[in-house]
Image 1 (cartoon, rainbow, N blue to C red):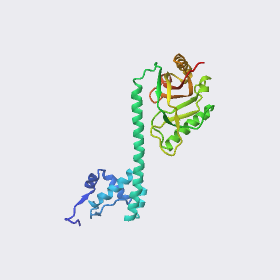
Image 2 (cartoon, rainbow, N blue to C red; image 1 turned 60 degrees about the horizontal axis):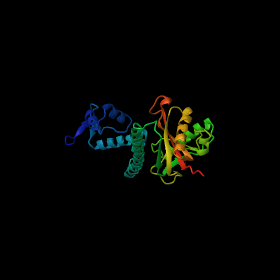
Image 3 (tube, rainbow, N blue to C red; image 1 turned 90 degrees about the vertical axis):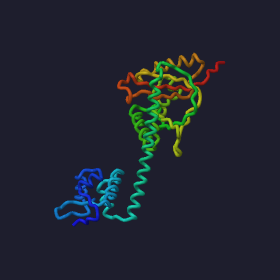
Image 4 (cartoon, one colour; image 1 turned 120 degrees about the horizontal axis):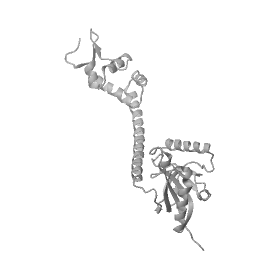
Length: 278
């Protein structure tokens, strides 16, 4: 018999309180996870307000990725000590997820900013600008790699960025040595890189040299890169510069934004040194 001085909830009322359907409560009862506090002689189920907190903890643990089986295992050995340890473990998980979400938010912000800026770029322009020193995270040396090894190097670099949480949202670029560019081997990169505006301790970095750079944009597939490089060399010579140690390339528009390779845009940044003639 129900105690008239205590408020009990029918399955429907309790389901509404918990914002789930009745079948969820019936299923929890069937698997022994959350059973009604009592049943009357007509087999009607009744829940108490105290069981709401119990239900809330189940939903909390589910939201944190625990399976119903794992939750059942905890419920089979409940104690204040075990609950405290469980909550501490879940807090660590939440802290890790929050860091991951903050990193994703940062990546999204970078993508928004760089794409918005690209909308106003004149891809026919060539300019000479002073670059401050930048910190880059590099791949292993890939100079003179075969196509197969290059594909693997890209895959390994992406995995490394993800594993070390060094994906900053900036495009993956390629660095080419001076001698390769002068020989016309524009895509014989020595390293892949990603910019690191806030370098994290414990990782080796490369400092891009501060100085003058000539900047241009190549529209189209990589097979026609030479045409843009020739334009850059002509302007460089007219301005009294020679090619410095490295050339940096990175996509402005790639397959994420454009469907056709003919519409891809590559930003080319070439280190400059003054041509001191005798």
